[in-house]
Amino acid sequence: MGASASESAYRVLMGVLESRTGQTLSPSRIWRIEMSLKPVMQRHNIADLDALVAGLVTSNSRQLLDDTVDAMLNNETYFYREYSLFDDIAATVLDKLREINKLRRRLTIWHCGVSTGQEAYSLAMLIAEQGEKWAGWQVDIVGTDVSYHAISRARVGLYSQFEIQRGLPVQRMVRWFDQTEAGWLVKADIRRRIDFSVQNMLTDRPPLASPADLIFCRNLLLYFSAPMRQKAFAKLRAMAAPQSFLVLGAGETVLGQTDQFVASPRLRGLYEPADQQVRRAAAA
Image 1: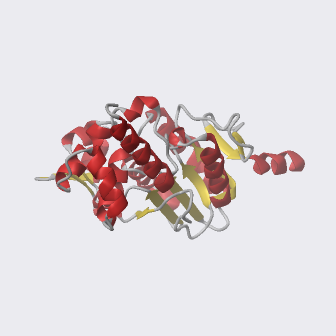
Image 2: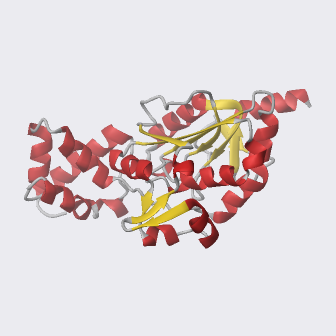
Image 3: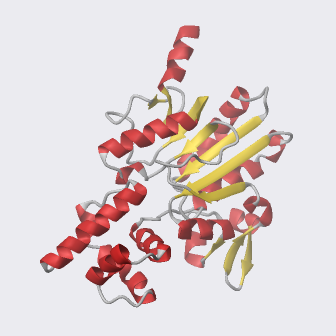
């Protein structure tokens, strides 16, 4: 990492990231800090990491702090990430939720760690394609992320040719996007279906009008320490409806991490609140 002063700078930056987001940097990501922060240093006319840390300590610039934290986050995402999962949601999960909520005719989806919005828009497209099933229903999709830059992009819904080709079938691209000089823009009908906001899932209450029936929290908990992960699971459970489903990333699990959720016996790769299964067993 270079001289001792730079080692100190790395430690400070890692502390800033964890205090602001709950995320920690694995050894494999630490070496990328300087590369990730170069655009921030150029934008703010800062010479190196030591000067950046000094600026964070002495400056009152909220913009510098936000830009620094934002640059260290991993905002990797794409449309229909793990396509088989979205197929299962379209074919099975949404029908289960329609049955559970048929009396109140309301569905609430919370996408936590939504990044630049591709997966949330994928969910919105699934709902739109099942239009007749959801006629007369109140369907709320809420996308939250700690990154103000990612949320700004998600709200606009404008994607490059590279981004649009990652996971998005041509038929859906033509149906749900408009090609513009600046890129591919999500059609207004789909954009209106999602409420995006900047939120820290560990400390902020998401803007949900009712408990979440389906929670997406994919490839976010990987970056939390064990205590932060337990806190995150507790927050997810507090926001979940009594009968609901949680979707994690392919490399994530609840095993050995929390007693708040358990693997769904009905739906592969999904999780349910633990007390939901207890109630179902008692009623059997």
